[in-house]
Length: 344
Ligand code: SF4
Image (spheres, rainbow, N blue to C red):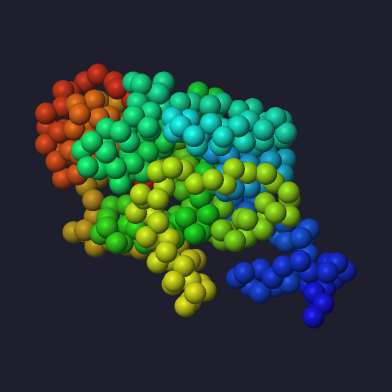
């Protein structure tokens, strides 16, 4: 059966059916619609004010590649300027190739690029060193928990370094739905309560963050990259198979097969979630070490680094964190900026 005519331009042959609406579109009309929807998300959510200097968290993967490309196209309309910020976690055999992809994109799109490394920011710790340390304590499955916290901190540092006023990340609807599921499965009411909305306004001196692709499905992100001929790095991180997120992803696929709207329903559920007063986490205060927002004495990044430096990584992410904090000396400044409340 021949492909139908594009439902938008009514001249070209349709190349795809949009996964959610079923609308048949040609590649050009699909890309235009995708960009218009991201523009709507940004404007309706008042995510990026005019004149904003926007640090784009660039990993070389499909999501951040598409995000940078779309925002670059929308920048004149939004009156924003962009700066790519890439984080080198120190993952041998993985991150070097991904960073090469980011450098290629920055050169091709003539966007400034800054790379910040865990090793420089966190007293010599790389993710490979963290993985060796946590494997020794039987916690190799926790790599992404450490990395998510440190990555968020590193991106904040990189954004400040380039004078950014806002941070954007490439999380899409599927990523957000996975995060909501993970938080439910862990019974993590605090993260559930903070995870809704399209971003965070920048409490406690942190830069405002947002996720302009949060309502875009992963399938459409891939289709956009395909029709715009974007090259991205698609290999999986060597630590990803250990991550709990993989279970949430598998579960989400099953749910989506039974109910196609499951991804967006989960994203919107988190936006509307209201916790009972008794379930609300305590109001965050300042980390006693770095001054970032923290729900306990130490922010997550300081607690993790403290545990690693003492050879007690297990305490830093487990129930023993309070014990570790009580022992921790006050004052000093091991890492600057904000607390991380969301795992990568
Ligand atoms: Fe870090 Fe985990 Fe992502 Fe690898 S998969 S970059 S360890 S968060």
